[in-house]
Image (cartoon, rainbow, N blue to C red; front, side, top):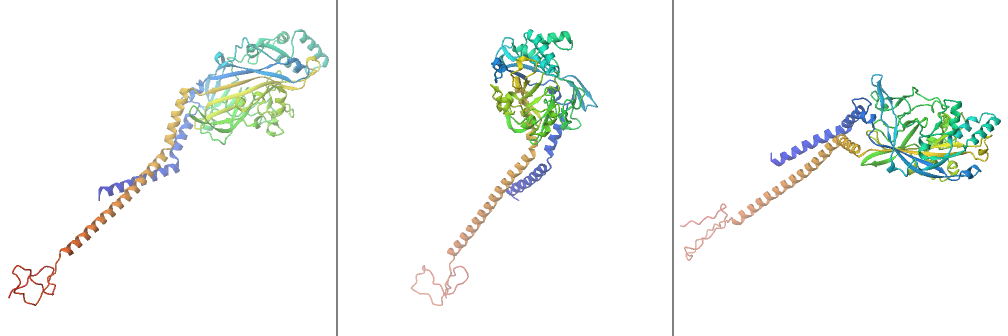
Length: 530
């Protein structure tokens, strides 16, 4: 066997083995299963897992951008006209949110933690100085008092209204951004504090929220089931809330938005419990995106999350009392927040009924600036970019006994909205890209084997064809040489003619002898002399 033949046979054998092994691995999905099992094991809230430290101390910086709606025509609005507002902001704060008081429960299947948040002003990301800039907005303590007195007698309301007027308190107030956000001593609340000590004399949209937490959480670690990774088991000791009017609305579903299970697919709904909204919301797949070279799935709340119960009956449970429902795009949360009739929505009433948008001049909702979304890396489930956007509003309407409200048209009035953003940092993004490259190579290793088998199969075909061609050329050369040899032999062969006639005596002795007419053998025969 020649070397060429040995090479052909060896190539064929190796190619066949690679194809058989590669196809078997692809069909059995051995490497994909191995990677998936590894991910399920690593993405657990245990001290041994690689993700525990990042869950405990989130590395990406989180920024809170506050935007306020400055009221530009308070007199016209109080006279029954349409309110006009002007957006000012952002006033940006860096948010720090480490997990504290961590303890494992029930053999490590659950974990208890507090999540206090603290805020530090970031001037380079802000439009101005919050301690200097002024904003005119709705006087929420005043509205809260009116709302509380709405069930009292007309004469009592009238008397209290006159007293409040003497304090210089009106439906709108003018304060610095810092005061409205982080608190100031309100004259009306101060008077109430002297009568009822439990009433705080300070008011601010973020009053007492710097350095405090949103409640006590118990999370599933994901040890028993990777799909439960990071899901909330209880909040403030509750597995469900009791504010809303249906069991479904009171459910505490999903995570707190910081983590999600690995191996996310496009068809599933992701649930988040938002303590500031007093409810759980779901997010659905929107599109594929890329963040710092990392492929991700974008999930966002669909329009049915805040849809009117007339269009989405499952939201009827959020009407409190039952049947007292608002329109699409808004949610009354005063049931879990004592005091004023607070309503939440997306910024500028994005995805809300046009009647709320048209009631205020100066609003312009759009998807790019006002949509809430999460960009998740599907293999690991890690959020690599997030924008949580929510708007705080208050219901303003006529209250008998308060003359300043007698011309008001009932309006859901915007106060401010917040844009909570986080994007994976460069170091974490680099580590993520390396991890995904390794996962991709390992997962596709069977395909690499199949590819090598196909390449060797093509080499085998080339070698086989060239070998056939070589053999054909050799046969052609042998045939040509044989034919040439045969024709050469015939040309050089002579036949001797034998004659019975005597030789011509005149023939010279040196002359060629005569041949007879017979062919004797295959060589010349010389005539015999007498």
